[in-house]
Image: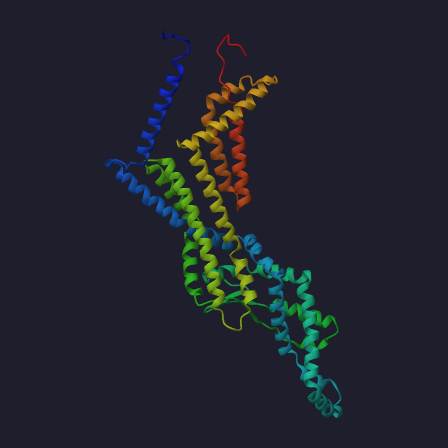
Length: 435
């Protein structure tokens, strides 16, 4: 005879609930994959266009901010060019250029005028016999003194002061306006080394080489950049400089508008974040490709190593901006995905809540009482969470020049604040309930 046992129907009920849950999840999956209804096609198209514009404007935004900061911020400009004064390749090139120019300007023939007229024919004969040896020795002496200057702190100070006094130089290099030590001549960007030569002349005189005092004021140029693309680049940078920070604002506005117009906003947010990160990666790849093409097309007489060092210094902060945008895109995409309704996202959130709930329970068993704080956080948890997100976003925007480290630290601080809110989340117990 069949016997009824308590709880014998529980396995069947549990299996039925699991079957219904699987059916609901399968139906949700089909809905997620199904095309949007016809009435949503307009919104979807608008969202797609706005998100595409955001992705395309991202690399332009990075270049615009880089150009604007280099032109308007003298401190940023100095941080860009100061490392060149310590680069061994640049120092060697400067030594060669300054030594050659000084040797061309030293009036060796005036040595004859310093002796008695009767002895001048003999001295001219001796100079003719040992002229090359004398020139080599003199060149070695001058090179040694110039090398001593370039290796000293005085050279770094001269380099900094020249660029500080002529900050308009970077404006001229990028836009063709202004003045200063940097000039554009057709397809070449050159740096005037006159202050370095003047200081080397003074040092030579101080070392007892009085003939150097007769060197006139010399304005010699050192090639920084040489490319037939400079006129085109200058025109593009001028447009970006005029646009200023409005290009990044427009990119963010397109991204936000695309997310708001989308039917599935979380998925659109993930797409926007990853798409903008991809746009920044394309810019980084373009910088590397242009670097290779630029070095390959340099004339035969240009120092390749020095040109490479200058290029890397000029685009250093632009590469940093690329890394920041990629890091920020990954963080935003991860945050949007975790808040979604996917199976793995729900599992992550459930594990997050259970872990922090277990910690809260341990604290309660240890005698920790939240008092009125727990119910307050429980009531305003959503508002407080969004306030934390807004605070992190505001800190990132107001940070002068955020780096990847700053971006990750802000994300970790936000995560810590959200974890703290979860730990403090304790609903108010009903009256008479046991603790």
